[in-house]
Image (cartoon, helix red, strand yellow):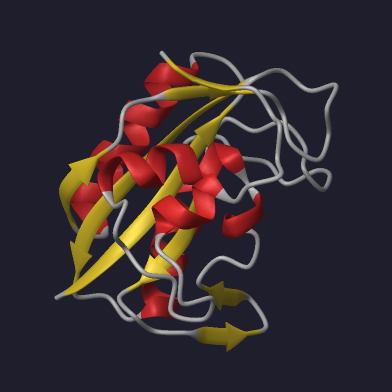
Length: 159
């Protein structure tokens, strides 16, 4: 079993329900949920005129190898109505792999740790809630330290 941290996000429709449904499907097909952060409302990042997001981090334990986990998560996104029409476009649900154990993965369709997590308040706020001492294997800094060093001034508040 491997500890995996996932970021869930939604900014369309019933955002809360999409996060709940995503967690239910993740537990059914990807791995057992061991911890989950609170839910945070965040301004849209990258495409600032889009509706606000709800974000949440889950810690799961999985037996799936990284590519199989990614395929399962992409299937869950599709089941919940995700359409990839534009970069940083609005979405019913988005599920990102933040960390896969202590592994570093650099493949065409999967980079772990997530390459932007250390720059994004909407990721680090909920992640620091459940894993403040988790160490980034490349940057060799804890999640809490990364959060405290952030330059990102995006509004992120717990709901």
